[in-house]
Image 1: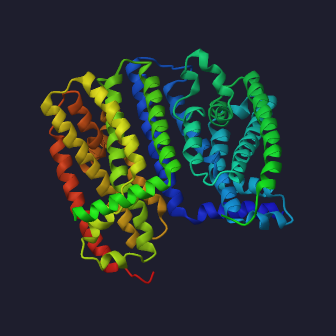
Image 2: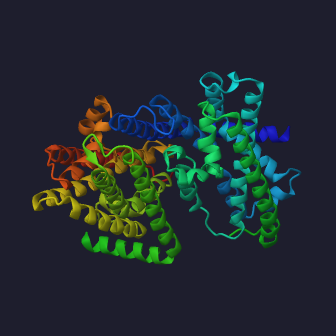
Image 3: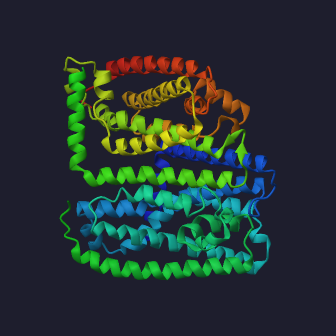
Length: 258
Length: 255
């Protein structure tokens, strides 16, 4: 219950600054429109009705969904944790009768609720995911949950580098660039030559490209299982990394702020 | 005024030398996003040799020119603009208002961002190579340079108008990012957009013209739109100046 309050507070924070939220959504919409018009021109001038198995109307949907996912999978925990370490306020958090990582997860969830709602709604209405039988629906839901948890753990593991870095702001453009290129936000990774097909199982692609293709109904049950397995593998890797770095980091933490 | 500007530039350089790692990182990120644009452009043109008459080289010319305008603005004005909102909101303009200088230009030129100079020079070199392959005539090359300068002035005025809104609007930080998003959306061939959007951003808020016009001069397709963009930029400059004067009347130093 105590973590649920965190989730509610995070949601309120997102909704409190409605002007900023609206402008943020507006600028995201502008960027999506640019990419959509560019791709429609590519379809038009290439004379192809299908690029990498994706038709023009599916490409439009792909670009919208992948950008909503980019909003869901934010890197905010890194900067929040950095603030705690730099100010020395992490000591106060550690003294509280809570698990910081669980609280951080609920905060992450709360901030993303409006975008998760949009993704959920699109999955329920537009996507064929839940019309392909119980097994497919359940596997798809599991893939979404595992990927969400995996990405949160990944971002949290990255946030621990704060123990050794003075400034973490450079991570923001790097992570944006990784999501653009490796997450399939700039273009679906399937349009790349076959030599790059292994890229689709990187964590950013699982969160962006694969979850978008899932919504479009482009993944077979076998592909859902493969993506799920990779997400599990990345979860184990990030958990191990988290455990290792946390113990080392907390030993180097002085708690006096900088 | 030039003497004061020289002092401000010297101070900016001293700050840059203090934060050397930041300088290197800013330059690296600039290059990183340019490379992403190149890869994305490469993907588009791997399916078709031309889009609305633009070849891959023309497209490269367009996005590099757009980056040149963007980095030109960043080098000359972005640090001052980032600082200005805080100065207005925290009531710190008093000190500069007491000085015998034009407060509008003093705050607009308060700092230059040397890290952006690295990316500006790199982009300039790449654009030089592209132009060498496109072979513009000397007159078109000259008008290309004029169009880039007008472009930098246009981006400056848009940002100046947004930042000065801090005299009236508090906390709407996302507003300051609008010009950047508008310009990055404009770094595409105008013809990919529906006619209404084209007309709006070529004639009313000519951000598409600002990026497309110099690129057209680069590949020897001169256009009268340059006159229009110059006129609109001049008008926006006047508007931003009047807005600043009005803002100062509203300014309360005990914020």
